[in-house]
Length: 280
Image (tube, rainbow, N blue to C red):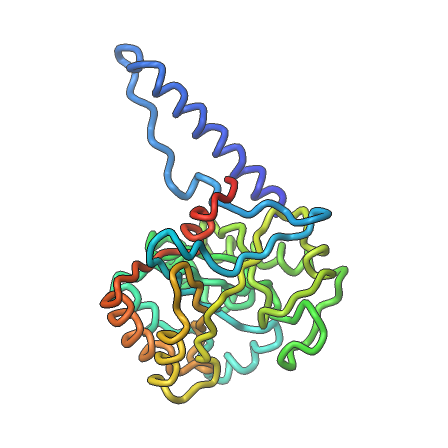
């Protein structure tokens, strides 16, 4: 992860240098204009560290800067679920991704490293589609606190390594630029967990709207819960796993047109974080 941050920082420095050259006048005769850096080469905005260097936590964007909303999807797969996948259980959701593409909805996908290992082609497809951004959801999807929805727990001395391992797996799957955003498994964290990840340069991303899609069987109820909760700047948490969230795709087909009718614009998490005046 540290090497990733250094490479991104170097890319940002090069981008700044090219921009400075562009303001000095036209390039010399016979030399092409400097290429515009690819958006993915620019470090996404992050929040400043908290007191004592604690990992910062982001829950929603500004309430007063327009009607924006970010849909986020957790691509969950725990480290020990390989046998279940081998027996035919689906932890991916191609129909949901196809619907988001058809509706032209940008989204942020928080991906576990184990999910990237199991579905590398889908991870790579998401990572190369400018409509999506891929962020870190740990490798193991084990909890970073005790008593978190029955998830196994990762020890404090392994938390940082678990996040770094996820970045490695996501890159190995072919995602070129996983963002410096991290979502705690189950959304469970405490001061110990925030301290364990300090220095990684990540912003922990939570949410302010719970869709209730996990293990739900009523898509209309999920859609109502989202529509009732959304406010300007909201971050909605949903899931990208057919086995654990079978109604999500149908709920999205209701939520998206209704929020657009209400004047909402769909954005990625990075845009909401940037709107807070976060640093790059």
